[in-house]
Length: 318
Image 1 (cartoon, rainbow, N blue to C red):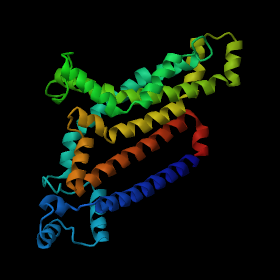
Image 2: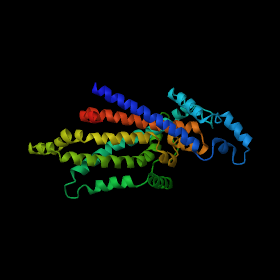
Image 3: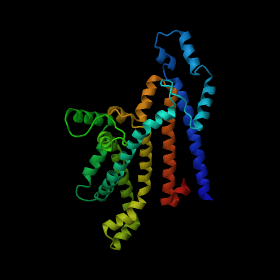
Image 4: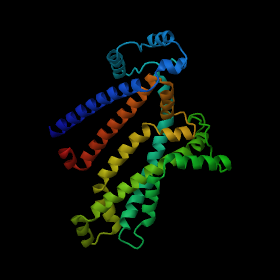
């Protein structure tokens, strides 16, 4: 019964959050300087021409009417037509989703394979000589260096010198897996630097918190090996903040790694939405930002659910 009440609160909170976000998205898109008619027709168009374009695309209706029509259609999975290409937004997103999804999968794989072990190792060595300084330095570097700086450096080096990997020239995985991986390795590596650093830092702090607990001292007193203590006692008890940050980072990645997609000329959702902002393609902008919000809310809810399974106290206190 308590679990059902918790899920009901979470679902209600998620629905209200998405409703407020949809309102903010719609209002922000309409408040951007320069409307769709001005962008399409140019600054020297007459008022009559602008009015004709606004009427053609339904932009002359009341703002609340436009919002209601868009929201009611979006609830049923219909995000309308792109105002530029006149193609369904859902179809356009479907073509670009595999690119962003592949970046997300590669980034999260790197976070789990490299970030978690690096954080655990740094925490375990915290009291020893050197204190895991190299791990702390690496995580601090990853968090501090902007993606556009690191990405620009990588693009320059691999474009200037023949180092065996491709910059740009995206090829779908189903068409040529080898060419796809050659084109995706570099952007995924650039994107994963931040993800690995955040995961390693969070894992380190979580493990350090667990290592001072009395049951760890009891395990040491019983003569358990360090590896056994880490596996049996440390990892599970330190997993909740790690899972939380992994869920948040997944939502960030899937929401669109805009800078990386732009630098490496990848036809993902993030770069597509940014282009739509410049064109005042309201349907695409609204759908893209709403999709990112949905992913974030869903990942947060799933993260809380997993945390509740690992530690029942989490669900009772949430």
